[in-house]
Length: 135
Image (cartoon, rainbow, N blue to C red; front, side, top):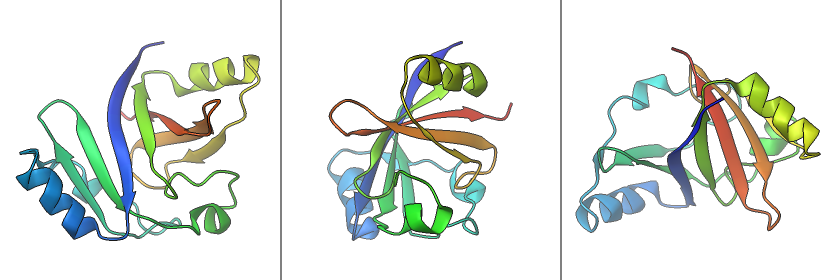
């Protein structure tokens, strides 16, 4: 099972201002491959901007305190943001979490078409996403 850092998700009340900041101050560019992959009918239709340095991505998402309620999950990945990793075997990663006694919220493919996403907390309460993308 392979795992690699994929993106950082930052939540904001003003996504256009965040997008302008990250593009003008840090020189990040739009990440065109993701905007058309969004799934907005399953509990999150907030504004999102995807930017990249060509290798790493930053997802600038509209803060939404109601996501966990609408999706009936125990964890809200859009309250404070999260750090995300990509794996090539989500089932093996879920098994690892279960073996280590780490509870997780399995969101399936709720926000990005073709991405199976799970979310869990680190010991300090930071939200971590691990997802597997369809090939």
